[in-house]
Every structure is written in structure tokens, then in C-alpha cells.
Length: 84
Image (cartoon, rainbow, N blue to C red; front, side, top):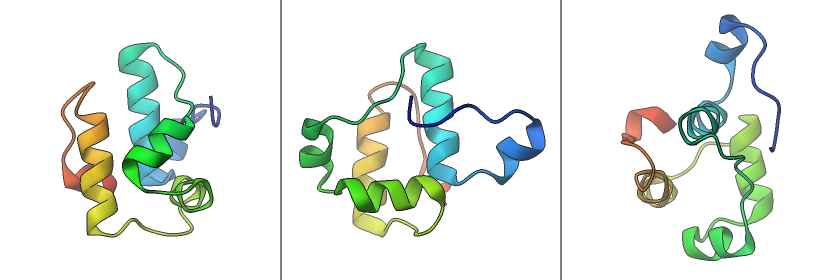
């Protein structure tokens, strides 16, 4: 797991959108999300940039949002608003 789940509902509400999406992925699939080299190649997002999204330091551009939506839609419905 990249990070631990938020301890309180307030922490969950304040966490970055991508972190909330990954938490949702882990809850709904009971799998631990660990991006592979293949994930980075398919999305075209490098590890550093992905980590910045995860920490809320940067926001994905429209192309990156589309590729993340496409990836997570394999597991459950995702909208662009989930990443904003």
C-alpha cells in the first residue's frame, strides 16, 4: 500500500483526490494498489509526478485525468470530478 488509510472522516475529506480514489480502489477490490512499471508506461505518468498527485502537490492535466479514469474504470465507475 502506498499510504495508510485516513484515520478519521475529516482526514479522508482533506486527502488529495487521487489518494481518495486509491483508498476507494483498495476498499472495493480488497487489493493493495502498488503501481507497476507497466502502469506507468500505460498511463504515461512517471513515478515522481504520480507521487506529487498522490500527495496533492500537483494536479493532473486533462490527458492524465483521462488515462487515470480509463485505468480505474476497469474496477469501478470513475468520473473526472473524482480527480478534481
